[in-house]
Length: 447
Image (cartoon, rainbow, N blue to C red):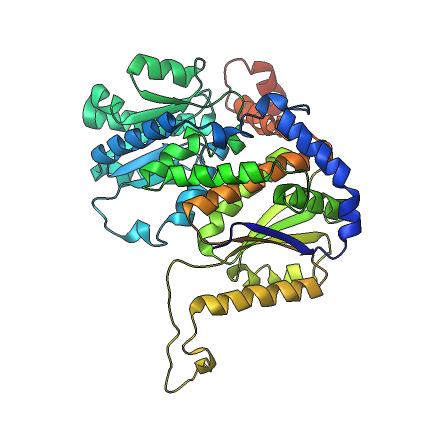
């Protein structure tokens, strides 16, 4: 089976001449990522991470996952942003689409909290857990990020009521800073099992650290294969030639399109299992590139579903968009379309064909239609939704993101704009230390 492939053959408004003209820039940007000579170089720990993950760490994560599986029917993974999206993306891509509705007493379910402040969501989660044996993976460098901290306080309290403090300590694992922060202090005091978030790996690049690997292992998936796939792509993307470095070619192509006026990139899938992969990708690129008044706006659609909602805009709307399509070469299962004697729906011409054959023709037909509508189309093909190939895909996009950010002329590894809403929220909630901000914002909304 072929490995991940990237094609920019249908880039349309930019051709090979424009992209080739960017080769020196792309190589310089790659060098900044590889050698740590660019802005934000203190957050480049992810670059060589796959090849540096030790067998002992994988073994420790798997053993911890087994202990949680032995004690728990459900494990709640608490985190927000990069502290949950990577794990969610991989688990959803690998899971049975109807796993939530199946009664599988021997399989531990992983659910998520701390990614929102929805009161109904948290109430319903606590109610769901009321008759379940559950544990917690709490992920936070500081332990004070509002959304996960609220969720952890609620869930920790419920777990301690159920099994006592000692029992809770056996069912809580913290993924946090090595030595600092409220969660580290609590973990040391309470005796929680801990894993470290490396200081030099930002949240949106952390899926291949214990942040992502532990929840994925608890869900029952092969984290060694995931890491192996990423490791293979790490090696591939060291090349300084477009022909052999798909991440560099993708980064250069999307920046050439941006310079030609294509301001919006839509990540497209034709497999519903990739919905949360699109959410992970949106954070990776949005948080990395959207700054200094610059940046391609990242959006995502699930086709063919969204062809019946967004399809019209994509086909005929403002021509400021391009698409990157993730195509999955082979599904895991085979389903044939039957013959119907009455043929009232007129679909007997499809009888005997696999559903995936119809889906692939919908994918190809859509790409052709959008190309005809002057929407540049880039194509990423993965052999199947398996751990190894997801590892390749994750690292492909991560490496391209670093290169692309430097091509854009921004620091891809900070996120100064994220703090704006937090300051306002704390001021509105009268958090101690925000007295001046509270007075100012209340006067502003009163006017």
